[in-house]
Every structure is written in C-alpha cells, then in structure tokens.
Length: 287
Image 1 (tube, helix red, strand yellow):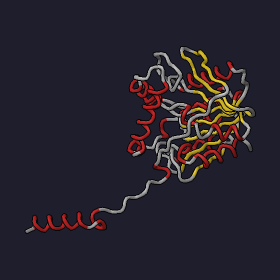
Image 2 (cartoon, one colour):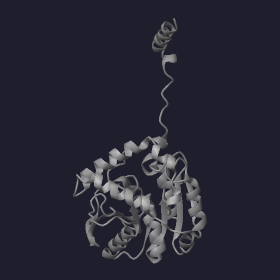
Image 3 (tube, one colour):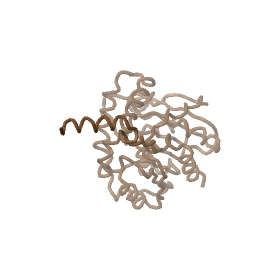
Image 4 (cartoon, rainbow, N blue to C red):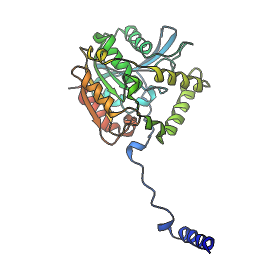
C-alpha cells in the first residue's frame, strides 16, 4: 500500500505543474556572463619583445592615456565594452595581453606578476609613454597595484577591480560558483582563437593557476609604502572569489585609497553591467 501511495503521489506531482516543480528563478545579473562587444579596430597594434616573450598591444583614441589590464587566462578582448566608453571620454586607450595570454607569447619559465608588471613598463617604454592611468581586472588589478608599488612615477591612477595582494584573500566558496564552468569554456575558446599555441590551453591554465596559488604575497608594510598614484580598490557586491574583508583591508592599508563597491554584480562586472562599471571607472579617472 505504501508503494502504491508513493506512485499515486508521484503521478499527481507530474500532472500538476504547480506541484511538480517550483517556478524557475530568473538569473540575477551577477550570475550572468554576457559576451562583451568586440574590440574596435585599433589605431595602433604591435608586439614588444621583452624578457623572453612578445607582448601584444593595441591603441585607440587620443587624450589622457589609460592602460587596460585583463584577468588571469583571459585577454584584452574582454574590454570590448570599456574601450569605446574611454575613447568617447577623450582618453588614449592601450590594451595589453599579459605574457602567455591572448596574442602574447611566453617562455618556459613559471609566470609571475612582477614579470608581467615589467612587460607593461616595457610596452610603455616602446611607445614613449611616460605615465598612464591603469584599469585592472583581477590579475590585471594586481599588476596595476604592483606598478603603483614598484614604478609609482609611471602610473597616475589605478582602478583595481577584483584584485588581491596576498593569499589570505580568497573566498573558498568561490570554487563552487556555478559561473565558473561558463567562464572556463569562454576563456578556453578565446585562447584557441587568439593564441599562437592554440592547443596549449590546459598547460597554460595550469601555469596561471600555479601563479595564482602562490602569488602575490605583499605585506601590510608593502601596501602602506605605496605613495603617489591615486588608488581605487573596487569590487562587486557579489564577488565570488575575493573576500570583502580583504577588499576593505586593501582600501584601508594603501594610503589615500578609496573603496568602491559596485551593486548587483560579481567578479565579472565589466561584462555584467558595463554601464555601471564604466560610470564608476570614468568618475575615478576624470575626477
């Protein structure tokens, strides 16, 4: 009888949409991963040979210079929503693919954030660019903050989004975020499309993960010694991977830094809410 009752109940649930399943919840903006607009045709494009790699860059527009630095395993193609906004706001925009990422090459050595920071300086030198503001996303934000630390005379401002400066920053629950599978698929496809070694994504992504698992390791004293560039520490209020406590710590420890929390977005705010991200970015750069 119990088995029969269970079968009847199951059939009833299947017959009644209201009972069979709860309504499917519409995804929030912070759970989405929209495709960015394509990068516009550049005014200038090239590669700079530096320290065993060839670093790709592209330039757009005229005005106060801004360098856009992307995140780990990504490429400059994710800045398709930001480049036109910056150009329209009278900025000269430079996008750079980090070594091994996108169109840039790498050698056999392990990847390192300070090495990538040196690559950015090398591109600036090749273009006779004395100083620029930096907008960095995730690993790009780390590189921007290292520039402020190591070469403060070369960077006027840093808009560091979703960045960490030590390994205590990570939110372990981020490893279970449902958006990760979407991100991994997109980045693998972009790598296959852009890289000179299109079949090496697995080895490349492992090298990026090895870097992210061991770096950066800057102390409060290192951060407190940053002086000169104006700094904004920025994140989304649904950030998956970096703890809010770490983001607040960076803003509190770097002298004069301001804290900006973008509403309704996650680690992928530049594509989730381009208008909101761009408004905060331009307000900081143009203040």
